[in-house]
Structures are given as C-alpha cells and as structure tokens.
Image (cartoon, rainbow, N blue to C red; front, top):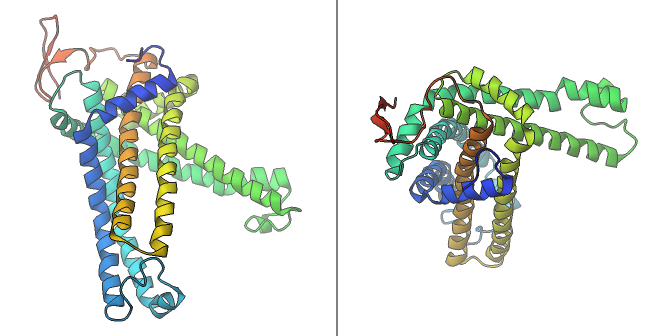
Length: 343
C-alpha cells in the first residue's frame, strides 16, 4: 500500500488500479449499464437498415461500406434517423451523467469504508448517499466546462491571442486568412485545441477531488468544497495531478492499442466479413469500455489516497475511522466504547 502522507504518483496509480480491478462485481455492473444505454440507438439503426435494405441489395454487400449511391438514395431517411437518434442520445447522455454521479458515490463508499465484504451493497449505499450532492457538483462542472469553452473559443482567445498577439483583424477571426503562413494557422488551431483539452482535464480532476472531499468529510456544500479543492490543487499541483496523469497515460495506452487492433480487424471486414471477425471487433470495443470503467474507479481511489495526505481534517470525529458494522447501521470503533450511526 501507499503511504498517504507521501504518495508516489506511479505507485499510487498502480495501487489504485489493483483496488479497482479487485472489485469485478462493481465494474462489470457499470459496464453492463453503459452497454445497455447503447442498445437503444443501435436497435434504431438496425431496424432502419433492415427496412432500407430488405430485398434490395445482395446479402453482406453493404456491411463494410454503404456506398455513395445508397447514401444518396436514402438521404432523407438517413437525415430523419440522425435527428431521431440525436434526440435519443441527448436523453441518454443526461442519464449517463446522472448515473456517473451515482457510480462516483459508490466507488468512494467502497474505497473509504474500512470493512470487507458486501461490496455491491456498500456501492449502492454510497451511490444513494451522495447522489444529490454530486448532482449539484455536476451543474458546477458543466458551468466550468462552458467557461473553458468560452475562454478558448470565445472573446478572450480572439482578443488576447489573435488580435493583440497576432494582429488579426476582428473580421478574420474565423478563417485567419490574413496570417502569412498556413503552418501558423495550423499551429494556432492545435494550440487552441490543446489548451482546451488541458483546461477540460483540469476541470475533471477538480471534480474528482471535490467529490472525494465531500465524501471524505461527509459535508454537503458542493460550492464550498469546490472552492477549497481549488486552493488545494493550487498548493499541491504535483501531488494531486501526478496520479491522474499516470492513470490517463495507462488508459490511453491500452485504448490506443485496442484501437489499432480494431482497425486491422475492420480492414479484414472490408475484404470479406466473417461472423468471428465481427464478434472479435465487438469484444475489443467492450474490453476498451471496461478498461475505462476500471480506470475511472481507480481515479477515485487515487484521489482518496492523495487527499488523506494533504487535506486538513475537519473539526469533528473522522467518519471513516476504523469501525465495524454494516452500511447505514451502527458503527462500532475498534478498541473503543463509542458507537454511532452512519447516515
């Protein structure tokens, strides 16, 4: 295990991954839910494709490529299908975000409560326990993400970088045709996208540590916890960001590797579709999704390890001291006479 007072980023990340992998019932349940969300749009596309291709095309002739003629002939139907699945996707995205709040509470409950067994019961207890606090934090996160988009793709970028830094007139903010080199335009766009990605990543890390702080101290104010977390991130940028960066690298490495394998299988499908290639491609996609679910749980475990070393305790008994008892029931401290009820 990692010393909470001085956690090493790589070791803390590996320890967090082991802790998340050791809860297969949890991450398999989350994986099943996320796969279930995708069935609706998939079935809509399957039903439409079955109707559009019924008795009109040779079997398997469109499995690798729909073709320009097919897209032109069915352009109205494809547009209507896109609109319908887009509306469905918006609703599913909202469900996924709310479910993410529940899953975060479950991961934190399992990692914080120093008892063994009944992991699924504790997971659902934690998801319900902090759900509304994390929903309030979700709204704050969405506001922060919108602010990041405005800073990088709105007036601040246009004025500070383009107008003042590059002498670009306001009428040319979109196309950047007054710049002397196409390479300069590409570099600016890459820098803009990279800055936006970094800001979004920092917001995500801030959200993880804020949720961890709310659970660690068992407080209710998402706004105040978020402000305190900003101060902690500013004071300890290396300690707080290092485990998340290591986990991000591990996540991207595995997902990228699986992506290369999937691309090669897609090439085989183009040359000639076989049932086993489609099954293998589906398995790789689910494996990549499962890995992301595991890493998500590992991020919360790592955030707990770091927070316990740098976050000052509040002026009341630690709700997560070593105790015995089921979730939501009496908590009996080891080596003491007091007991309390975990709410």
